[in-house]
Amino acid sequence: MAEMSGSETPALALVDLNKAYGALKVTDHVSLDVATGELHAIIGPNGAGKTTLIHQMSGLARSDSGHILLDGQDITGLSMATRVRKGLARSFQITSIIPGFTGLENVALAVQARLGSSFRLFGAVSREERLNAPARDILETVGLLGRADLPAGLLSHGEKRQLELAIAMATEPRVLLLDEPLAGTGPEESAAVIALLRKLKGRYTIVLIEHDMDAVFALADRVSVLVYGRIIASGAPDAVRQDPAVREAYLGEEGP
Amino acid sequence: MTPLPQSPAAVETRLPATRAGFMRREWLPIMLFVLLALLPFAAMLGPEKYTLSLVTRVMIFALAAISLDLILGYGALVSFGHAAFLGIGGYAVGILAAHGVQDAALQVPVALLASGLFALLTGAISLRTKGVYFIMITLAFGQMAFFFAVSLSAYGGDDGLTLASRSKLFGLAWLENDRFFYALVLALLIGCYALTRAIVASRFGRVIRGAKENPVRMEAVGFSPFRYQLAAYVIAGMICGLAGVLLANQAEFVAPAYMAWQRSGELIVMVILGGLGSLHGAIIGAAAFLLLEEILSGYTEHWKLIFGPFLVLVVLFARGGLLGLLARVRGKDRADG
Image (cartoon, rainbow over all chains, first blue to last red; front, side):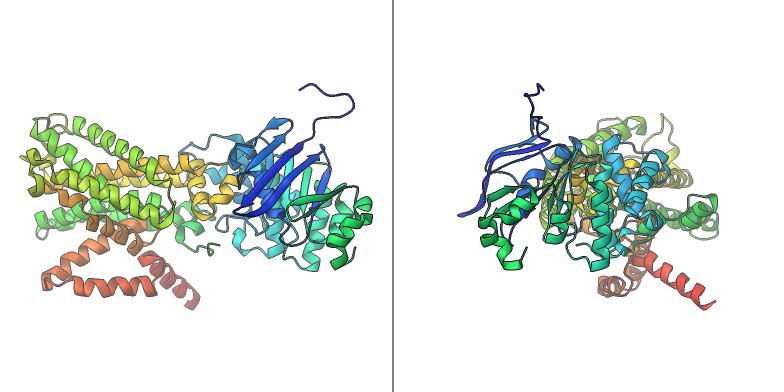
């Protein structure tokens, strides 16, 4: 793709995205550019449509109109699985792992999805070092290597959040969509997840939805504020914090 | 969210891949197969023909139950029309034999092709639905196959079709020998067990097992479960079709009743009775089901009055089926000793 002078193609771009459930507009003419390597946080009060927006980006929900571009390529009509293979991974607000698989198997599964050949009917998959070695590396990065052989369902809530991030990383995404990775974690657990997010920052382009304002303002390069499906402000964290419309609509309630 | 499964299968995948691990994992199926291999010798001491015929039948249904366990136990695909494949395999033998094609070398490929094709077509439609709808649509396809067989008036219609003899094997009438037939069925049972065991442990099997527990997660790592589930459905259908070929030969008779929805229900009961998602549980379930039926029906024609409550008890108190019960008893022994 030809580069325009001075401005690179954004890693992820939303162009005039819309979605309504019946008469309720949950995504209202949202346009957003996320630059490569940026950590872009989306905040907003409950019911602002943040999770729906992530569902639309990841392909779990269809958009009524508008476009989603991944590295300049239109992915609006693609399924979630295809988007993942193109480099757009996500985590879920409610932890989504495979509880009966071990941590290692959960991550190795994502490695397998990337490498292909999943119609192979023979050969014990649990002994494939091609899958297990990269999976172990990632588990080490997220600090779960010691728990790798435990069924994922037995992990603590915080560990499950870390595992879910490990699974997303194993797909080798260029863009990572994180839907409230701190949801439901206690103070200690959330410190571990924040430390992990700090590690991931810069390595991936990240879109982060989060309620924890301390975490958002500590991590984000840019912040967008979503209220009733509209982006009312977008910019550097400090600028957004000072924005009067934002203070009124959102931060006022909880205090910046 | 699905509760944490504690089925034997989930535990199995975590055992070490050593030789000792292999024995610990496989001692029960190996013992089962050794028992089945020795049984004909014991049978010589008693009513041999009756015993061989009964146990051959058990093994054939075990084969069908294994194929169902592959999709039901590992894929959570509750197919309520699985008996259709028994019928397709059976009718492949019956219809070909009626036209003078008696050799299994031709009958078996035709049966496998027909059941595979039926699985591909019905699976491609059924697998677009989930849960109760999947159960209903597979039931509907099973009933379609049933009524199609009923309408085959040239091949006996409702009454079915009696075979003049068992299939030939490359021109030879070996299958007429009950001992040989028993050995052949046992060999096929072991072969299909090993095949399905390899499949569930493979890359493909991991996708099937993952899609059972969390389909959305599978899509979120880049899998579209549909293709894999369809492939598993076709494999299961073909194995069950093979069981149908054997069943027709065992009974020397084919009838629409092979495909009745009650038969599909019985297959599900066998799998659950033995223990879902373990493969050898399906063998134990099929044996328990058919032997209980045989024994109880010897006492009273209302044997289902006893069998029904027994099933209720197993489901209530032995979660994980007979295998789960066995594991618990063994676990208790170990804890006590």
